[in-house]
Image (tube, helix red, strand yellow):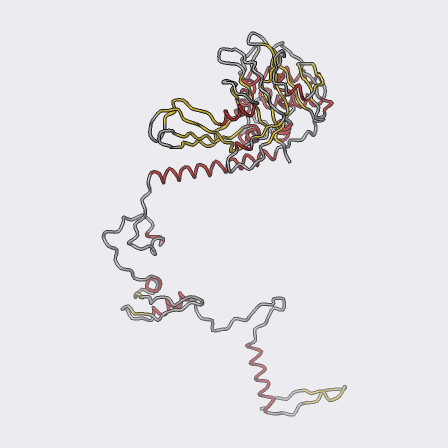
Length: 481
């Protein structure tokens, strides 16, 4: 029976279409098209409807073909991937899973190498049985171990450089008007006070203690015995500009030093005091806090020793060096840079080679793999017998160590003079003082409680004849660009 449709005749109503067989065919076509059309998302431009009869994946197709096969093996037709060459014929087993995915291989001959433990994971399936692995020699193993150690050492140096950059080195909170002297409480503490003056004029130390070792974060059982806490108190009292607070802080830190084992009751060496102080902070502070100090105050050196007999080179990575101790004997005609050349390259007597086991005099060279932000140089003026060497050694206000860097050390190693600890007298009795530069770039002489305005020439005085003061410790700070 034909369908009837409404048609507009007038504004008042609708009339009916006359029945026709062509209208029935059009309605049937519309109905079938409406059921088969896939709705599209108008917001997605590149969406294509997927056909209903989508071909099965390659592996599933092979499995279906293998299941219909007889128990005996048969050959399948070549399967061609898009963009690749036709693959080889695959021999399918009666097993529907194994037979469709694994090719048959010839049996291994009895002369093949022993099992390596990798056969079951499929890594060695495409390796020919005729290929024998190259045996690892002792030299190959040593070379690999050296490379692994070098990589680990380079990563540690990059971490040190990152930590050192996080500690500020500006003069904020350290006004020049607050600079003051330190009262010699016992009459023999000039070695300590001159060292404190040099440390206080390296701003990075003060920022490290203020930022990373506050009073709330101290983990020592008794904060009154914490060396770092007492040093932070001295720094705060010094830059506050109040002499009474500074004197009280110096009295407290003197008691703490005795409590922690500093047994020097008389005159002592500022270099020994500095070494002891850093050792105390390394023992008392958490590793993640001390790592900042280690990053901006200690060197990391690589030393290489060449054997003159067999040519073997023995290398040690990551030797930590805090103070560069420069020997003044034998004499060298030149300034401090000539003595530094001898420090970074010198002869070793009676060295036994690890390779040939021969003992001879060999050459050892040092290279800087990590350059700290603060460099401390010691002129070794006192011999083991206690005698003082007053030989003048000229030096400049700029220290350039770029020539002694390793190839992986890209940090700028140019430094400016910040402070000098000078000594007068001999082994029987002497006195220490400090010449340091402040925030306003002016130089001052700190002689216990006295502060005298000075010039840069006083800090650069090499200890000429007729003068009592000779430079002993030099403090340099990195020039940040």
